[in-house]
Image 1: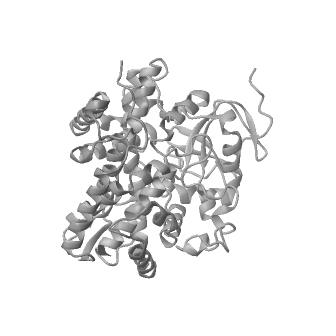
Image 2: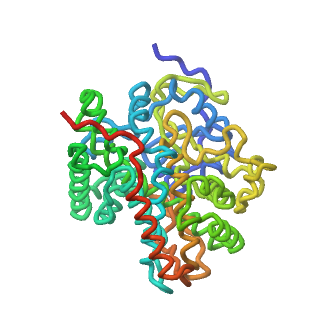
Image 3: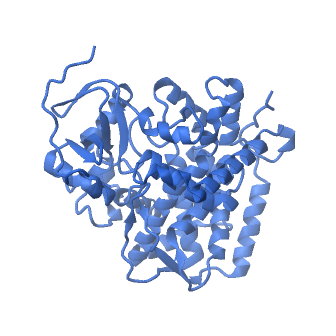
Length: 479
C-alpha cells in the first residue's frame, strides 16, 4: 500500500514559463543548486522543460544518501536509456541492491588504488610520451590533451589495449550518448547523425578488439597481468545468467568511457588552476622534482606528495565533475520536514556543501591550506563529495586519485607551461558533465628535461614494465 503524503510540497525554485529552470541549470548547475539551497533550504523543486525533480541538497542530503540510499533510492531509470543504446539490459550504473554489490565486487580490483599503483610506470610513461609530443610555443587544446593521456592510461591498464586510434570516436559517441540519453542536455536525434553512427561503429570495433584479445588462452598472453576485462569475462563465463554477453559491452568499455569526463576533466581543471596560481605551480614543481628517483615515481613517493594532493583536493572541491546525482524514490521517506513519495524523481545535489561559507570559508577562493592537518575542512561529515555519495559512489575513486597525482606531477616535471592566451578566464562547458571549454589552451614554454634525460627515462620505464611480475594469476581459459 502506498504511503499517504502527509506534508505540503517542497518550495519551488523560480523559473521561466514553459522552460522552468532549464536555462539556469544548463549554465552552472552547481552554482544554481547552491543558490536555491541558500534561498529555499535542503529540499526544493525544479523544472527543466517537461521534467520535474525534487532536489535534496546540503550535508544533510549527502549523509542521508550515504546512510539510507540503498533503501530509498534507485538508479535504474536514470541509466536505462544509456544501457539500451549500448545494447545492454543493465550495467553497473543501473544496477541496485544485491546485484549492484556483486557487480562492484567483480570490478573492485581492476579499478582499485592498489592496481593503479602497480601500474604506476605505465601512467608515467604514457604521460611522458604525450608531453614530449606537445609542440613548443604553440597552442595545445587543454581538455583534449588530457583526454589523450588519461584514456590511454585507463585503456592500457584496465583493458590491456591502448585506445589511441579510437579516441576521437570515443569522444564523439560517449559525450553525445551521455548528453542525449542520460543528462538530456542534447536532443536524442543527434545519436542518429552519420558522424555519431560512424563513431558508434568504431566503438563496437574497439569492443570486439578488446574482447578478442582477452579471450585468448593464458599461454598466448604470457606477459599480461590479469586486468579488469579479465575479471569481467571470468564472471561472464562463471555465471552467464548474471552477466550475459549482451551486457558485456558497457562493462568492458567502462575504462575508456570513464576517463573522458572524470579524470581527464579534473586534470584539465587542475592544470588551469596551477597556471592561474604560479606560486602553487612553483611549489608543486619543486615537490615533483624532489619526488622522482631513478627516473620514476615510486608508490611510496606518490603517497608522500603533499602539495600535489592538496591542489587536487581543492580542484575537486571547486570544479567537481559530478555536481549532482539523479535517482528515483523506491520507498517513501521523510526528509527535512517533507514527505518524498515513492516514484518521485530526485536530484541529490552532492557538491552544494563545497560552496558553502560555513564549511569552506571564502569558497570562491582556490586555497589548498584548507586541507592541512590544522584545518581539514573537507573532513566535516557530509561536506565533501566529489565522487558522489551512497552505494553508487565512484568505484574508481582511488584509481582516479593515483592517476591524477601521477599525471599532473609528471607534466609539471617535464615541461614549463603557460596559458594561451595569458589572460584566459575559465569557462565551463556543462554537457554532458562540467569540463573546461574548448578555448582552454596552453603552450609549452620550454622542456624542463634534456632529450637525453627523457630518452633515458623512457628506456628505464620500459625496462621496469618488462620486468614487472604478475601480481594476480591470469584467468583460466574460457570453456
